[in-house]
Image 1 (cartoon, rainbow, N blue to C red):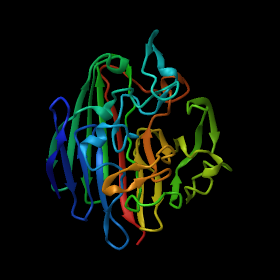
Image 2 (cartoon, rainbow, N blue to C red):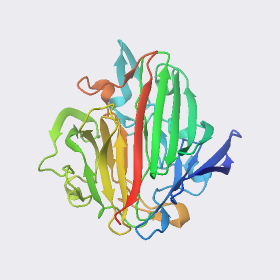
Image 3 (cartoon, one colour):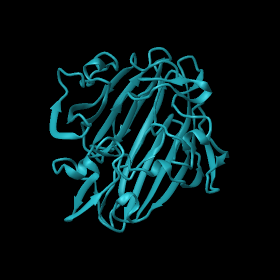
Image 4 (cartoon, one colour):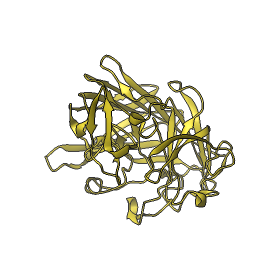
Amino acid sequence: MDITAKDFGTMPDGSKIVSYKLENDNGVSFRVINYGGIITHLMTPDKNGHADDVVLGFDNLQDYLGPHPYFGAIIGRYANRISKGSFVLDGVSYSLAVNNGPNHLHGGIVGFDKKVWLAVRNVSTEFVSVKLACESPDGEESYPGTLMVEVEYLLNNQNELVINYTAQTDKKTHVNLTNHSYFNLNGGKGDVLGYSLQIDADYVTEPDKDSIPTGKILPVKDSAFDFRTPKEIGRDIAQVPPGYDHNFILNGNPGHLRQIARVVDPVSGRTLEVLTTEPGVQLYTANYIDSIVGKNELLYKKHSAFCLETQHYPDSPNQQNFPSTVLLPGETYMQTTIYRFGTTI
């Protein structure tokens, strides 16, 4: 196992961006940059042993600095949506940026996806890792509290990409972190509608027209959201136009690491298993990607990838019946998610 680093460009303010390549002994590797903690490449073998890149993204920093749908990035302070960009905490009303229709999305105008992170490498006999750290000052994007955040990307010889998140605050605040990788298990080619997907969830949160939970919890049984046994992503997608962008309430105990999803690409034979400590996962089927030119000149289109964003439920700061996203001084926010790669053969 090894880590190598190379220059990935320079920010407008002169900050140097570095690309770190982490490799295991089985032909699995990924690259992460210290801008946004973005996973830019993820190479894993198919059923014939041919390695290819299974995440969407760009070849250069300039494209990441432009508009894009959060390809591969760390999302915070709050992943997903907050209704009307506001919440009340201890009687104080906080007004956040409204950057997704009438709502706040993925931490605001300058979220963690646009930060330059400090990076530290670690190589051991069992894994290689890069630990990223940043400070989000009190009032940044109108959130209360100075938040100290660390995100560790780790690769082992079990072909697992492990993401460990921790955060601490000096004021009561809300925290909800995730990674926004877009997966296409056939090397970025074609769409993902023929992939088999299983999600260990009996319920989803009902969204309104702006993807904010209504507060109702819906059973997945006999609906387009029933992925309790494997089925093609595209089988029922026409019932939920323009596609899936929904929060699944995961079975099992939040805080305990358990497998919650499995995806199989029948063409390449690649498989992806997802394990997490989180209470929910957002399934997103790249509904709003429209002819983005990505790596190697590939043209990304609608449904060209899927995201399984492990996180707390959308709009939890305004939904008392949802698991709390409040972080208090003296506490540590902790989350672990594992993406495990394999093949059907």
